[in-house]
Length: 329
Image: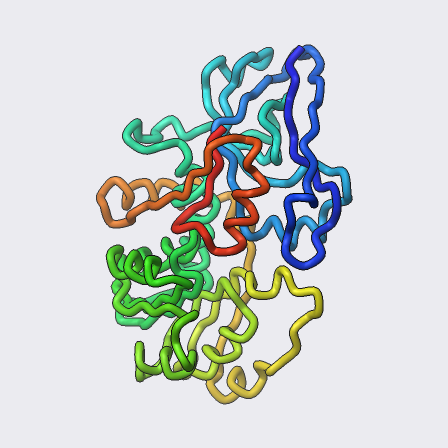
């Protein structure tokens, strides 16, 4: 029998998550039955969505939700051979048993030159979020001006690079000078540090005096309330996340969107990438092609050690990562 380690939600988060909100458990796994697979984690993802989803979908004592790249170390299922790799929504645990129904086999055409961790980032859910949010929700066109916030994160950095591939001008903001320099390095036309400017309204106007055709919003809150007034007529807004609100103890209120929505005739649409799950193969193939061609640059913040999952998660929510935050077991 194998012994698994798993991080559980000891206490629902009140405001910003704390190390004491988590508990590390040991779980004795039974012997495999016919049709089952034993898997060992290689890389685990930490993502902003885990914060609001934990409140909505989890109860105290549940294993923390999340996705990982795992290796088959024992199999009684002919569809999954020993040594093969999968992507699994298995949560924060380093070993687990599966029937195979909840596993996505690693693409057979995955390039050997690329780290498998990218299946959790640029070539995985975050990259697909950027891909479908930009092409299906924002419906970018060549010549558009695209604004993206949290632009140095796992999703935002891909949004900007995809928009450049699509022939757009791209403006991004991030929370440090290092991140701003990175955005310019990967092709953003304009970038600024929102923590050091005196006026968000002025910074947005300076970056694009004519306004914005598309706004890919990962932050919500005050940023979105200011940015919406800088949209062009018939502008499109993709609401992907609201990280500025996730840790609030008291919900933020207003200002409200109706006036600019009406008078600018804007389209604003929230979305979850799972809407296009039947097209994930198409999106991943396109992303891998652009990565190999050098049109999309990838950056990862890798934390070593399964025991450091909470620290990596908390650091990601604090904006300590450049690109995708991943834990290597």
